[in-house]
Image 1 (cartoon, helix red, strand yellow):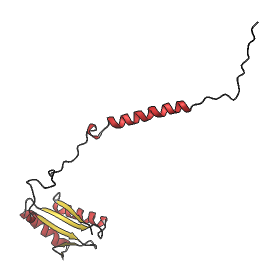
Image 2 (spheres, one colour; image 1 turned 30 degrees about the vertical axis):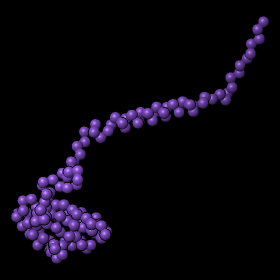
Image 3 (cartoon, one colour; image 1 turned 180 degrees about the vertical axis):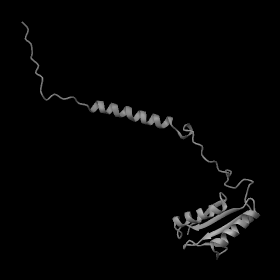
Image 4 (cartoon, rainbow, N blue to C red; image 1 turned 45 degrees about the vertical axis):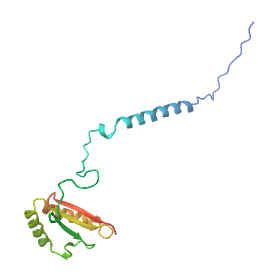
Length: 144
């Protein structure tokens, strides 16, 4: 006669999920890395702007001559100056309009000192200049 052992099922039985969670998170990490590698910017159809400068940093043959640039300096108070002289907005608008009519390649450059002029003033003045000159406005900053 065989003696059978009686196995008792404990009411406190538990399943250890640590190994299962390790495998699941490893698979998750694999798919995250795989999806990041497959969705590179070149595959997303983004058209980035191309610089018109060559590898040495010099401009191409389409250089602007000094006479093609109308520089306006911005002081800390937000006043726009031409050649160090303060001008009323109407005078400045007339000067810019005359300059752009005379120079077909002319550019308006707003020069602002980063440390003394607030960004809000610079943006406001750029908006005013764009209303006059359209897309022929650029910004130049200087560090002190």
